[in-house]
Image 1: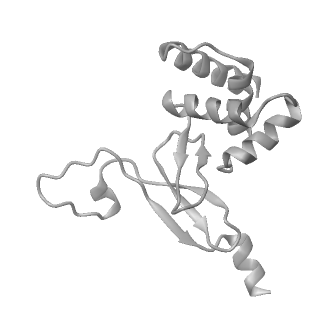
Image 2: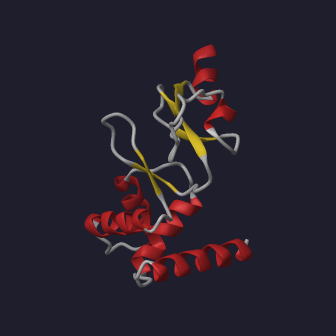
Image 3: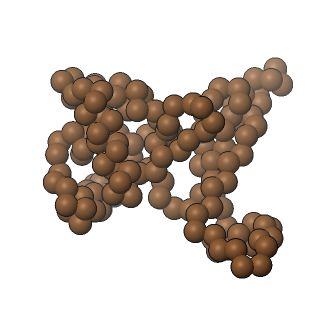
Length: 148
C-alpha cells in the first residue's frame, strides 16, 4: 500500500511542479481525499471529509485546491445536468453511470481506441478530441431494493 501512496505522491509532486504550483498541505489533503474514496464527491462532500483531518480548512480553500487539481489534469470534473459538479480522480478513459434512485456515480470501463470501437459511426471528416459517455439507470443496490 505504501508503494501506491509513494507513487501517487510522486505524480502529484511532479504534476504540480510542471504546472508552476507548489505543494501545500491543503492540496495534498484534498488530493488524498479524492484518491482514497473514489465516489465522485461534490466540493461540499470533499470539504466535509477534509475537515475531519484539517479542521481549520475553509470551503473556499477546498474549491481553490479542486480548481488547481483540475487545471493540472490530476482530477476531472464530472457534470450532470444542473447538479453540483463532482470530482473524479480516475484519469483513465472511462464513462460514468448515474443512478437515478440514489444519485450515486460509478465509473464504467470503456474499450480503448476510437469511437468506432463503441459502435459509433462518425460522419466523414469528423475527429474526436474528447469522448464523454454518460449512462443513466438504477445501480445494483437500488435495483435490489426495488425487487424486495
